[in-house]
Length: 321
Length: 285
Image (cartoon, rainbow over all chains, first blue to last red; front, side):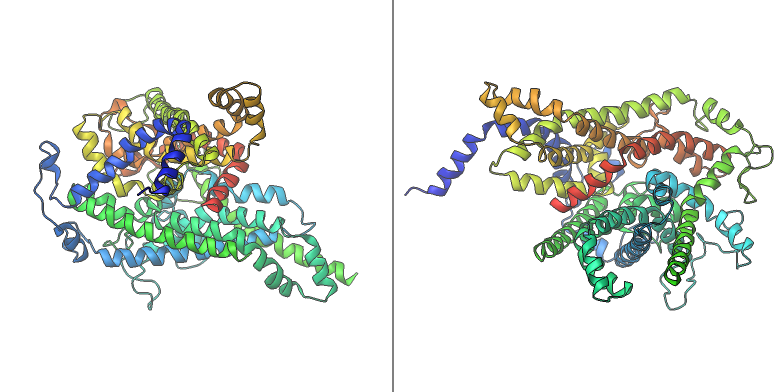
């Protein structure tokens, strides 16, 4: 029996020979630098690979032990707690993106006001945090959160506010009913909100400028107040442009290694650890390559899930236009 | 008349709101400039003044002469290593990424969807998630402790990015241009190399610069892989300063200005491409 779909496929491959030739160099490199490490990682995840195996790469097969150890927090690394880290990672992501959108959108609306002076200058100054390499910003903020001589505490003192705050070392929570969030969380949050609001502002500004002016005129003629105009014209129209940016922001923040690792270092007592910083520590300093591989695969699956969900949400909002 | 006064008050409030956020945005930078100019190289600054008493460029001189505490390596060497790694990664990724991007843009071949999706997944994958296998593989191959190994590691993220970015640009180049070239007797290869690539010079340059900025600012993999001072990079040097017990903050401030200034300048020049590139990639996802 002839399978016509097979013939079609073969025919298609034959006709596109040139396309495959064009992709070949990149495909070979990707196979070496990405596909092979991922396959190797899957193998390592089921072994007890540690530092000694770097000289002798024949570790023992241990089945699902690494995964079970991770889920049971049975890993020989100080303050390791997978579930707390995962939960904190989600809280961290949503609070950050909430503030990014709130500040970014409000500034975009302000900058989009007709006849406001100095708009161009303001815009250039406001995007500065985005232009500075993030690891340098993170190191600067770490210095500014120093207890005795940091700029943040000095500023609080000048304003006559409480100022002997041990931002990075006090394991207690400043807000009682949010007991799992220590001072270091707020230090990380301030740093990352500072880093991230310009991106949302620029995207929102672009979206606002594409809203047809006639809509506002029509609304004014119908007697709509500014607030009504914002909620029934501006917001629905820029939502579609903002959705992909918000999705991107969620994934960036979820994986924000530089801020967490350099500002709070995951401390105190591992309370501000996120998945990617924990994955790093399993390799350096711990050297638990087998556990780190299993952990990397878990992070990979979580991200794949988030990507598929966010992609679906983006598509859904696109088709709703 | 009453309407005008209302608008004036509204504008005044908006100015105040915007200026507040500008103050927040530039505060850390003023702080770092103030520390860089401080002549005392104190471990911790003690006051909030933009131009400290006796301001001088001594800190800049110190870090240019002795950049790396505890290792004998010159600024020129660090600079050369950073340029080599960042530039090498960028040029290599764009060279092999451009043909692949063209294929993804112009051909509807079996496996295209899967290929695009896998690039997207790889782009989302954080570096630390595959750190363990990379460390082991590069160690076993005896290239972990070298700049070559670092280029190898960086390529896994810059190559899919280059393909993704260039594909977005090729999509906007009209197909009629190649069709005209094909009618004139060009084959597909020369249509690509003689017509499409020269037209895409700005996009190629932007992609090279993006990838360059990526390699220039990366410190985590470099810090984990490299142990010989003669292959250290600028980004590692900066991290090393803070890792010490007593951070020399004036030196750190001066050095961070030297390292980030080129990036900030490139960034402002490329601004409009950065925004459109990011949103284009995201919308098309």
